[in-house]
Length: 261
Image 1 (cartoon, rainbow, N blue to C red):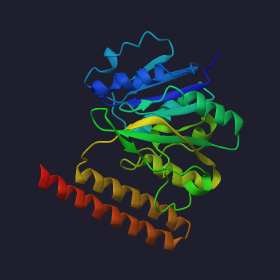
Image 2 (tube, rainbow, N blue to C red; image 1 turned 60 degrees about the vertical axis):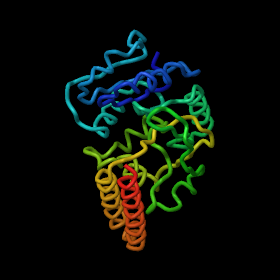
Image 3 (tube, one colour; image 1 turned 30 degrees about the vertical axis):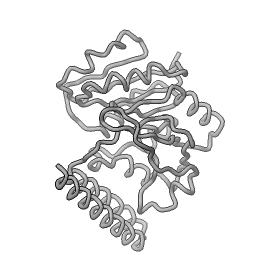
Image 4 (cartoon, rainbow, N blue to C red; image 1 turned 120 degrees about the vertical axis):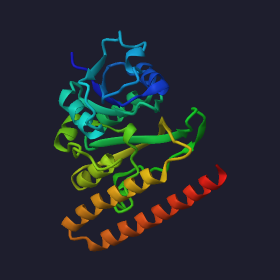
């Protein structure tokens, strides 16, 4: 029998945090799933050290290549046997009831295409340190597309058919393949977020300013291209203003970090 859920976990050198992430999937109260661990060219051997590989629900996919997250997720969608497709990252933790609650909601709401959850946050050492902002309804999630969509990628679950209709851009834009997909699909889809913290997201204390700059630049390019096609020049201006504010905030944080280090 095919599983209810196909879980996609793309891994590039997952290190010591990989085991806890996979354990949080194995220990779900909802047990009807398959986990595709897609090795994106890892060299640290962390996948082979996992104590769960005897579980027949876990499938390691390995070809020795590094093709990036978007390519691996499209590969997982093509391989999926489940009714639902779920995301997971190698450094986050699922709440034990995450799959059960998401499946129950999607079963009861066939009009919803993509479902996320609230996220608690933790630091590099696993210490809780807050929560990420969120919006619940499709209208609130999509109210300001020039600012982005508050639907956190590792929490996503949706029907496999939706992901087949809306594949990830490959190669994806730098560190914002999720926002590109949400922007491209939101007018023809329905999004929703469960108002419950069903995943703990690992936030790094410091992210290099250059990486943040590349991410902001890539996202604005995606937004500008989309809004230009929609002839929404005002939205491009708003997206540019939001990008400038974010870059300024990133720069201020970088200055503070260098002064304190």
